[in-house]
Image 1 (cartoon, helix red, strand yellow):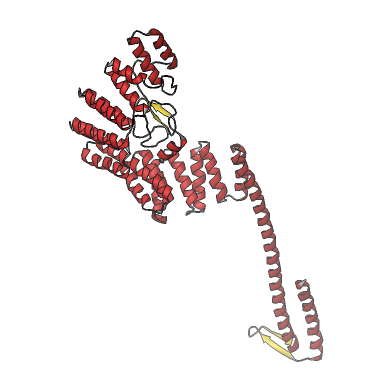
Image 2: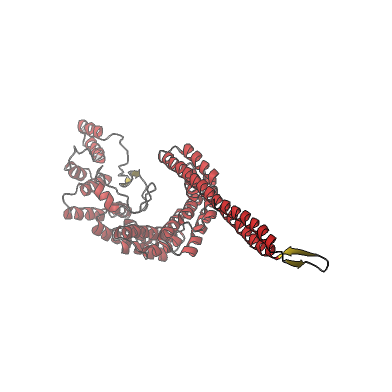
Amino acid sequence: MRLLVLSLGFVILTACVGWLAYFNPGHTTLRFSPELFLDIPTVALVLLSMAFGGLLAVLGAGFAEIKHLFRGWRQATLKKREERIQELLRSAINAKALRRFDSAIGLFQKILLLDPNHVTTLLRLGNIYRLQGNLTEAIRIHRKAKNAEERNMEILLSLAKDLAEAKRMDEAVQLLQEIQRQEGDGLTVQIHLRDLFVKQGRWEEAHGVQEKILQGPLGAEELKREQGWLEGIKYELGRQLLSQGQPDRARRYFRGTIKLNRHFIPGYIGLGEIALDEGKPKEAGELWEKAFEMTSSILLLHWLEDLYLELGQPARIIRVLQEAIRRDPENPVLRFYLGKLYYRLEMVDEAFEVLAALDPGDEKMPDLHKLLGNLYLRKGNLEAAVDEFKKALNLRKRVLVPYYCPLCDYHTAQWSGRCPRCGHWNSFEASPIMGEWTPSKIAAKAEPT
Protein backbone atom coordinates (compact mmCIF):
# COMPACT_ATOMS: atom_id res chain seq x y z
CA MET A 1 0.00 0.00 0.00
CA ARG A 2 2.80 2.35 0.95
CA LEU A 3 4.57 1.55 -2.36
CA LEU A 4 1.40 2.31 -4.35
CA VAL A 5 1.01 5.72 -2.72
CA LEU A 6 4.61 6.66 -3.44
CA SER A 7 4.29 5.58 -7.09
CA LEU A 8 1.14 7.67 -7.52
CA GLY A 9 2.94 10.66 -6.03
CA PHE A 10 5.77 10.23 -8.53
CA VAL A 11 3.33 10.32 -11.47
CA ILE A 12 1.66 13.48 -10.18
CA LEU A 13 5.04 15.14 -9.66
CA THR A 14 6.02 14.38 -13.28
CA ALA A 15 2.81 15.98 -14.56
CA CYS A 16 3.51 19.08 -12.51
CA VAL A 17 6.99 19.36 -14.10
CA GLY A 18 5.44 19.61 -17.58
CA TRP A 19 2.83 22.14 -16.55
CA LEU A 20 5.28 24.48 -14.79
CA ALA A 21 7.84 24.21 -17.58
CA TYR A 22 5.22 25.47 -20.05
CA PHE A 23 4.56 28.67 -18.08
CA ASN A 24 8.25 29.17 -16.99
CA PRO A 25 10.33 29.06 -20.17
CA GLY A 26 13.75 29.80 -18.49
CA HIS A 27 16.54 27.32 -19.28
CA THR A 28 19.66 26.07 -17.52
CA THR A 29 22.65 24.66 -19.38
CA LEU A 30 24.26 21.56 -17.81
CA ARG A 31 27.81 20.99 -19.21
CA PHE A 32 29.27 17.50 -18.84
CA SER A 33 32.42 18.35 -20.94
CA PRO A 34 33.54 21.23 -23.25
CA GLU A 35 31.67 19.66 -26.15
CA LEU A 36 28.88 17.89 -24.25
CA PHE A 37 26.11 19.91 -22.64
CA LEU A 38 22.40 19.77 -22.01
CA ASP A 39 19.96 22.69 -22.19
CA ILE A 40 17.04 22.02 -19.78
CA PRO A 41 14.22 24.18 -18.40
CA THR A 42 15.11 25.44 -14.94
CA VAL A 43 11.77 24.44 -13.48
CA ALA A 44 12.16 20.96 -14.93
CA LEU A 45 15.63 20.64 -13.39
CA VAL A 46 14.30 21.58 -9.95
CA LEU A 47 11.29 19.35 -10.15
CA LEU A 48 13.19 16.42 -11.67
CA SER A 49 15.67 16.65 -8.80
CA MET A 50 12.76 16.40 -6.42
CA ALA A 51 11.38 13.51 -8.44
CA PHE A 52 14.71 11.66 -8.31
CA GLY A 53 14.73 12.02 -4.55
CA GLY A 54 11.21 10.68 -4.47
CA LEU A 55 12.24 7.75 -6.64
CA LEU A 56 15.02 6.89 -4.23
CA ALA A 57 12.51 7.03 -1.39
CA VAL A 58 10.18 4.74 -3.33
CA LEU A 59 12.98 2.26 -3.96
CA GLY A 60 14.06 2.38 -0.31
CA ALA A 61 10.53 1.78 0.85
CA GLY A 62 10.20 -1.07 -1.62
CA PHE A 63 13.34 -2.77 -0.39
CA ALA A 64 12.19 -2.32 3.23
CA GLU A 65 8.82 -3.84 2.39
CA ILE A 66 10.43 -6.79 0.63
CA LYS A 67 12.82 -7.28 3.57
CA HIS A 68 9.90 -7.19 6.00
CA LEU A 69 7.99 -9.76 3.97
CA PHE A 70 11.07 -12.02 3.72
CA ARG A 71 11.72 -11.76 7.46
CA GLY A 72 8.12 -12.68 8.24
CA TRP A 73 8.30 -15.65 5.88
CA ARG A 74 11.58 -16.80 7.40
CA GLN A 75 10.28 -16.49 10.96
CA ALA A 76 7.18 -18.44 10.06
CA THR A 77 9.35 -21.14 8.44
CA LEU A 78 11.69 -21.34 11.45
CA LYS A 79 8.74 -21.48 13.83
CA LYS A 80 7.17 -24.27 11.84
CA ARG A 81 10.50 -26.14 11.78
CA GLU A 82 10.99 -25.68 15.54
CA GLU A 83 7.49 -26.95 16.23
CA ARG A 84 8.24 -30.02 14.10
CA ILE A 85 11.54 -30.57 15.93
CA GLN A 86 9.85 -30.35 19.32
CA GLU A 87 7.18 -32.79 18.20
CA LEU A 88 9.79 -35.28 16.99
CA LEU A 89 11.88 -34.73 20.14
CA ARG A 90 8.96 -35.56 22.44
CA SER A 91 8.24 -38.72 20.47
CA ALA A 92 11.91 -39.73 20.51
CA ILE A 93 12.22 -39.20 24.28
CA ASN A 94 9.08 -41.27 24.88
CA ALA A 95 10.40 -44.04 22.64
CA LYS A 96 13.71 -44.03 24.54
CA ALA A 97 11.90 -44.18 27.88
CA LEU A 98 10.05 -47.27 26.62
CA ARG A 99 13.43 -48.69 25.48
CA ARG A 100 12.33 -48.69 21.84
CA PHE A 101 15.81 -47.60 20.85
CA ASP A 102 15.56 -48.21 17.09
CA SER A 103 12.44 -46.06 16.91
CA ALA A 104 14.07 -43.35 19.01
CA ILE A 105 17.18 -43.35 16.80
CA GLY A 106 15.03 -42.92 13.68
CA LEU A 107 13.20 -39.96 15.21
CA PHE A 108 16.44 -38.31 16.37
CA GLN A 109 17.90 -38.71 12.88
CA LYS A 110 14.84 -36.95 11.40
CA ILE A 111 15.52 -34.03 13.73
CA LEU A 112 19.14 -33.88 12.55
CA LEU A 113 17.91 -33.63 8.94
CA LEU A 114 16.08 -30.46 10.00
CA ASP A 115 18.89 -29.17 12.23
CA PRO A 116 22.24 -31.03 11.90
CA ASN A 117 23.65 -29.31 15.02
CA HIS A 118 20.67 -29.75 17.35
CA VAL A 119 22.64 -30.23 20.59
CA THR A 120 19.92 -31.91 22.68
CA THR A 121 19.36 -34.46 19.93
CA LEU A 122 23.07 -35.15 19.49
CA LEU A 123 23.49 -35.63 23.24
CA ARG A 124 20.56 -38.04 23.59
CA LEU A 125 21.33 -39.94 20.40
CA GLY A 126 24.92 -40.50 21.52
CA ASN A 127 23.67 -41.78 24.88
CA ILE A 128 21.44 -44.32 23.13
CA TYR A 129 24.33 -45.57 21.03
CA ARG A 130 26.35 -46.01 24.24
CA LEU A 131 23.51 -47.98 25.84
CA GLN A 132 23.45 -50.23 22.78
CA GLY A 133 27.20 -50.75 23.01
CA ASN A 134 27.88 -48.85 19.78
CA LEU A 135 30.65 -46.83 21.38
CA THR A 136 32.29 -45.73 18.13
CA GLU A 137 29.09 -44.03 16.99
CA ALA A 138 28.45 -42.62 20.46
CA ILE A 139 31.88 -40.99 20.47
CA ARG A 140 31.37 -39.59 16.95
CA ILE A 141 27.98 -38.09 17.81
CA HIS A 142 29.15 -36.61 21.11
CA ARG A 143 32.24 -35.13 19.46
CA LYS A 144 29.94 -33.41 16.96
CA ALA A 145 27.86 -32.07 19.86
CA LYS A 146 31.07 -30.86 21.54
CA ASN A 147 32.01 -28.96 18.37
CA ALA A 148 28.60 -27.25 18.48
CA GLU A 149 28.87 -26.33 22.19
CA GLU A 150 32.44 -26.69 23.41
CA ARG A 151 31.73 -25.75 27.04
CA ASN A 152 28.57 -27.82 27.53
CA MET A 153 29.42 -29.84 30.66
CA GLU A 154 26.80 -32.54 30.04
CA ILE A 155 28.19 -33.22 26.58
CA LEU A 156 31.79 -33.31 27.82
CA LEU A 157 30.96 -35.74 30.62
CA SER A 158 28.98 -37.96 28.24
CA LEU A 159 31.93 -38.05 25.87
CA ALA A 160 34.25 -38.94 28.74
CA LYS A 161 31.91 -41.78 29.69
CA ASP A 162 31.90 -43.03 26.08
CA LEU A 163 35.70 -43.07 26.03
CA ALA A 164 35.90 -44.84 29.38
CA GLU A 165 33.46 -47.57 28.33
CA ALA A 166 35.43 -47.97 25.10
CA LYS A 167 38.49 -48.66 27.32
CA ARG A 168 40.13 -45.51 26.01
CA MET A 169 40.90 -44.51 29.57
CA ASP A 170 43.81 -42.20 28.85
CA GLU A 171 41.69 -40.15 26.42
CA ALA A 172 38.87 -39.95 28.98
CA VAL A 173 41.27 -38.79 31.68
CA GLN A 174 42.81 -36.25 29.31
CA LEU A 175 39.36 -34.86 28.47
CA LEU A 176 38.38 -34.51 32.14
CA GLN A 177 41.68 -32.85 32.98
CA GLU A 178 41.10 -30.43 30.10
CA ILE A 179 37.70 -29.60 31.58
CA GLN A 180 39.40 -28.99 34.92
CA ARG A 181 41.81 -26.52 33.36
CA GLN A 182 38.97 -24.65 31.68
CA GLU A 183 36.27 -24.81 34.35
CA GLY A 184 38.17 -25.39 37.59
CA ASP A 185 37.84 -28.23 40.10
CA GLY A 186 34.10 -28.84 39.82
CA LEU A 187 32.76 -31.62 42.05
CA THR A 188 31.13 -33.57 39.21
CA VAL A 189 34.30 -33.58 37.12
CA GLN A 190 36.39 -34.59 40.14
CA ILE A 191 34.10 -37.55 40.87
CA HIS A 192 34.25 -38.75 37.26
CA LEU A 193 38.04 -38.40 37.26
CA ARG A 194 38.28 -40.29 40.56
CA ASP A 195 36.17 -43.13 39.14
CA LEU A 196 38.43 -43.42 36.10
CA PHE A 197 41.56 -43.60 38.23
CA VAL A 198 39.93 -46.28 40.40
CA LYS A 199 39.02 -48.35 37.32
CA GLN A 200 42.61 -48.11 36.13
CA GLY A 201 44.05 -48.96 39.54
CA ARG A 202 45.87 -45.61 39.62
CA TRP A 203 45.41 -45.40 43.37
CA GLU A 204 47.86 -42.61 44.13
CA GLU A 205 46.19 -40.27 41.62
CA ALA A 206 42.77 -41.36 42.84
CA HIS A 207 43.86 -40.54 46.40
CA GLY A 208 44.88 -36.99 45.42
CA VAL A 209 41.58 -36.36 43.63
CA GLN A 210 39.53 -37.81 46.50
CA GLU A 211 41.19 -35.49 49.00
CA LYS A 212 40.16 -32.54 46.79
CA ILE A 213 36.58 -33.88 46.64
CA LEU A 214 36.41 -33.90 50.44
CA GLN A 215 37.47 -30.25 50.50
CA GLY A 216 34.43 -29.30 48.42
CA PRO A 217 30.93 -28.27 49.61
CA LEU A 218 29.35 -31.56 50.73
CA GLY A 219 26.24 -32.33 52.72
CA ALA A 220 26.31 -34.74 55.66
CA GLU A 221 25.35 -37.80 53.60
CA GLU A 222 27.70 -36.86 50.77
CA LEU A 223 30.54 -36.35 53.23
CA LYS A 224 29.98 -39.78 54.73
CA ARG A 225 29.89 -41.41 51.31
CA GLU A 226 33.01 -39.65 50.05
CA GLN A 227 34.88 -40.45 53.25
CA GLY A 228 34.08 -44.10 52.58
CA TRP A 229 35.71 -43.69 49.19
CA LEU A 230 38.81 -42.23 50.82
CA GLU A 231 39.03 -45.18 53.24
CA GLY A 232 38.87 -47.65 50.37
CA ILE A 233 41.36 -45.79 48.19
CA LYS A 234 43.83 -45.50 51.08
CA TYR A 235 43.52 -49.25 51.65
CA GLU A 236 44.08 -50.08 47.96
CA LEU A 237 47.04 -47.71 47.82
CA GLY A 238 48.48 -49.43 50.89
CA ARG A 239 48.11 -52.85 49.25
CA GLN A 240 49.74 -51.55 46.07
CA LEU A 241 52.69 -50.16 48.00
CA LEU A 242 53.01 -53.40 49.96
CA SER A 243 53.15 -55.40 46.72
CA GLN A 244 55.86 -53.02 45.50
CA GLY A 245 58.00 -53.72 48.55
CA GLN A 246 57.28 -50.49 50.42
CA PRO A 247 55.88 -51.72 53.76
CA ASP A 248 56.58 -48.49 55.65
CA ARG A 249 54.51 -46.39 53.23
CA ALA A 250 51.85 -49.10 53.11
CA ARG A 251 51.62 -49.11 56.90
CA ARG A 252 50.99 -45.36 56.88
CA TYR A 253 48.01 -45.72 54.55
CA PHE A 254 46.56 -48.72 56.43
CA ARG A 255 46.74 -46.67 59.61
CA GLY A 256 45.07 -43.83 57.75
CA THR A 257 42.04 -46.00 57.03
CA ILE A 258 41.68 -46.86 60.71
CA LYS A 259 42.09 -43.23 61.70
CA LEU A 260 39.16 -42.38 59.43
CA ASN A 261 37.09 -45.36 60.56
CA ARG A 262 38.11 -47.56 63.50
CA HIS A 263 35.77 -50.28 62.17
CA PHE A 264 37.59 -50.52 58.83
CA ILE A 265 38.62 -54.17 59.16
CA PRO A 266 40.77 -54.43 55.99
CA GLY A 267 43.08 -51.81 57.48
CA TYR A 268 43.72 -53.97 60.57
CA ILE A 269 44.27 -57.03 58.41
CA GLY A 270 46.73 -55.13 56.22
CA LEU A 271 48.73 -54.00 59.26
CA GLY A 272 48.79 -57.55 60.61
CA GLU A 273 50.01 -58.90 57.29
CA ILE A 274 52.89 -56.43 57.33
CA ALA A 275 53.84 -57.60 60.82
CA LEU A 276 53.77 -61.23 59.64
CA ASP A 277 55.91 -60.39 56.61
CA GLU A 278 58.42 -58.77 58.97
CA GLY A 279 58.53 -61.94 61.11
CA LYS A 280 56.52 -60.47 63.98
CA PRO A 281 53.58 -62.90 64.48
CA LYS A 282 53.16 -61.90 68.12
CA GLU A 283 52.68 -58.26 67.10
CA ALA A 284 50.15 -59.29 64.46
CA GLY A 285 48.19 -61.39 66.98
CA GLU A 286 48.11 -58.61 69.57
CA LEU A 287 46.97 -56.12 66.94
CA TRP A 288 44.13 -58.35 65.72
CA GLU A 289 43.07 -59.18 69.30
CA LYS A 290 42.80 -55.49 70.17
CA ALA A 291 40.95 -54.83 66.93
CA PHE A 292 38.52 -57.68 67.69
CA GLU A 293 37.84 -56.34 71.19
CA MET A 294 37.12 -52.92 69.70
CA THR A 295 35.10 -53.94 66.63
CA SER A 296 33.73 -57.41 67.48
CA SER A 297 34.32 -58.32 63.84
CA ILE A 298 34.00 -62.04 63.21
CA LEU A 299 36.39 -61.66 60.27
CA LEU A 300 39.26 -61.07 62.66
CA LEU A 301 38.55 -64.41 64.34
CA HIS A 302 39.48 -66.13 61.06
CA TRP A 303 42.92 -64.57 61.05
CA LEU A 304 43.45 -65.11 64.76
CA GLU A 305 42.40 -68.74 64.54
CA ASP A 306 44.70 -69.53 61.62
CA LEU A 307 47.58 -67.55 63.15
CA TYR A 308 47.48 -69.15 66.61
CA LEU A 309 46.95 -72.68 65.28
CA GLU A 310 49.87 -72.20 62.90
CA LEU A 311 51.97 -70.99 65.86
CA GLY A 312 50.84 -74.02 67.89
CA GLN A 313 49.03 -71.82 70.42
CA PRO A 314 45.36 -72.97 70.27
CA ALA A 315 44.84 -71.93 73.90
CA ARG A 316 45.18 -68.26 72.90
CA ILE A 317 42.37 -68.31 70.34
CA ILE A 318 40.22 -70.36 72.73
CA ARG A 319 40.82 -67.70 75.36
CA VAL A 320 39.91 -64.93 72.91
CA LEU A 321 36.60 -66.62 72.08
CA GLN A 322 35.77 -67.47 75.66
CA GLU A 323 36.41 -63.86 76.70
CA ALA A 324 34.20 -62.62 73.85
CA ILE A 325 31.40 -64.97 74.96
CA ARG A 326 31.77 -63.72 78.51
CA ARG A 327 31.23 -60.16 77.24
CA ASP A 328 28.31 -61.17 75.00
CA PRO A 329 26.85 -64.42 76.36
CA GLU A 330 23.71 -64.30 74.15
CA ASN A 331 25.65 -64.18 70.89
CA PRO A 332 25.11 -67.53 69.07
CA VAL A 333 27.73 -66.69 66.43
CA LEU A 334 30.54 -66.58 68.99
CA ARG A 335 29.41 -69.89 70.48
CA PHE A 336 29.30 -71.42 67.02
CA TYR A 337 32.86 -70.32 66.30
CA LEU A 338 34.06 -71.71 69.63
CA GLY A 339 32.38 -75.05 68.88
CA LYS A 340 33.83 -75.05 65.35
CA LEU A 341 37.28 -74.40 66.80
CA TYR A 342 36.90 -77.32 69.26
CA TYR A 343 35.82 -79.51 66.32
CA ARG A 344 38.87 -78.44 64.31
CA LEU A 345 41.08 -79.31 67.31
CA GLU A 346 39.46 -82.78 67.62
CA MET A 347 38.05 -81.78 71.03
CA VAL A 348 34.84 -83.72 70.36
CA ASP A 349 33.22 -83.54 73.79
CA GLU A 350 33.86 -79.81 74.18
CA ALA A 351 32.62 -79.13 70.64
CA PHE A 352 29.44 -81.15 71.21
CA GLU A 353 28.75 -79.42 74.53
CA VAL A 354 29.01 -75.96 72.98
CA LEU A 355 27.19 -76.67 69.71
CA ALA A 356 24.41 -78.79 71.20
CA ALA A 357 23.56 -75.88 73.48
CA LEU A 358 22.65 -73.85 70.40
CA ASP A 359 19.19 -74.29 68.94
CA PRO A 360 19.61 -77.34 66.67
CA GLY A 361 16.35 -76.57 64.92
CA ASP A 362 17.57 -73.18 63.72
CA GLU A 363 17.45 -73.53 59.94
CA LYS A 364 19.37 -70.29 59.56
CA MET A 365 22.60 -72.03 60.65
CA PRO A 366 23.21 -74.87 58.17
CA ASP A 367 26.85 -75.23 59.16
CA LEU A 368 25.76 -75.92 62.74
CA HIS A 369 23.86 -78.99 61.53
CA LYS A 370 26.84 -80.19 59.52
CA LEU A 371 29.06 -79.98 62.58
CA LEU A 372 26.52 -81.68 64.81
CA GLY A 373 26.05 -84.44 62.22
CA ASN A 374 29.77 -85.15 62.25
CA LEU A 375 29.88 -85.06 66.04
CA TYR A 376 26.99 -87.53 66.32
CA LEU A 377 28.83 -89.83 63.92
CA ARG A 378 31.89 -89.77 66.14
CA LYS A 379 29.71 -90.58 69.12
CA GLY A 380 28.17 -93.50 67.24
CA ASN A 381 24.66 -92.01 67.09
CA LEU A 382 23.94 -92.68 63.42
CA GLU A 383 20.24 -91.81 63.54
CA ALA A 384 20.87 -88.37 65.05
CA ALA A 385 23.70 -87.77 62.57
CA VAL A 386 21.46 -88.55 59.58
CA ASP A 387 18.82 -86.23 60.98
CA GLU A 388 21.33 -83.39 61.21
CA PHE A 389 22.66 -84.04 57.71
CA LYS A 390 19.12 -83.87 56.34
CA LYS A 391 18.87 -80.39 57.79
CA ALA A 392 22.07 -79.33 56.12
CA LEU A 393 22.36 -80.61 52.56
CA ASN A 394 25.49 -80.39 50.40
CA LEU A 395 27.83 -81.33 53.28
CA ARG A 396 31.44 -80.29 52.75
CA LYS A 397 34.34 -82.27 54.17
CA ARG A 398 35.95 -79.08 55.34
CA VAL A 399 33.83 -76.94 57.62
CA LEU A 400 34.06 -73.50 56.06
CA VAL A 401 31.92 -70.48 56.78
CA PRO A 402 32.11 -68.55 53.48
CA TYR A 403 32.52 -64.81 53.27
CA TYR A 404 29.63 -62.85 51.88
CA CYS A 405 28.69 -59.28 51.09
CA PRO A 406 25.29 -58.37 52.59
CA LEU A 407 25.00 -55.40 50.24
CA CYS A 408 24.83 -57.46 47.03
CA ASP A 409 24.58 -61.06 48.36
CA TYR A 410 27.96 -62.06 46.92
CA HIS A 411 29.40 -65.28 48.43
CA THR A 412 32.98 -66.49 48.17
CA ALA A 413 35.56 -68.59 49.97
CA GLN A 414 38.24 -65.95 49.33
CA TRP A 415 38.44 -62.89 51.54
CA SER A 416 38.89 -59.47 49.97
CA GLY A 417 38.95 -55.94 51.31
CA ARG A 418 36.60 -54.95 48.48
CA CYS A 419 33.59 -56.86 47.19
CA PRO A 420 34.28 -57.93 43.57
CA ARG A 421 30.59 -57.63 42.65
CA CYS A 422 29.40 -54.28 44.05
CA GLY A 423 32.77 -52.61 44.65
CA HIS A 424 32.15 -51.73 48.33
CA TRP A 425 35.04 -51.79 50.75
CA ASN A 426 34.84 -53.28 54.25
CA SER A 427 31.54 -55.03 53.47
CA PHE A 428 32.48 -58.74 53.81
CA GLU A 429 30.95 -60.67 56.70
CA ALA A 430 31.37 -64.25 57.86
CA SER A 431 28.38 -64.94 60.08
CA PRO A 432 27.05 -68.50 59.91
CA ILE A 433 23.53 -67.18 60.47
CA MET A 434 21.77 -66.83 57.14
CA GLY A 435 19.67 -63.71 56.65
CA GLU A 436 21.15 -62.06 59.72
CA TRP A 437 21.47 -58.66 58.05
CA THR A 438 18.43 -56.45 57.99
CA PRO A 439 17.96 -53.61 55.47
CA SER A 440 18.71 -51.04 58.15
CA LYS A 441 22.03 -52.71 58.97
CA ILE A 442 22.89 -52.90 55.31
CA ALA A 443 22.12 -49.21 54.84
CA ALA A 444 24.26 -48.37 57.85
CA LYS A 445 27.26 -50.16 56.31
CA ALA A 446 26.72 -48.94 52.76
CA GLU A 447 29.69 -47.23 51.10
CA PRO A 448 30.08 -45.85 47.59
CA THR A 449 30.59 -48.20 44.66
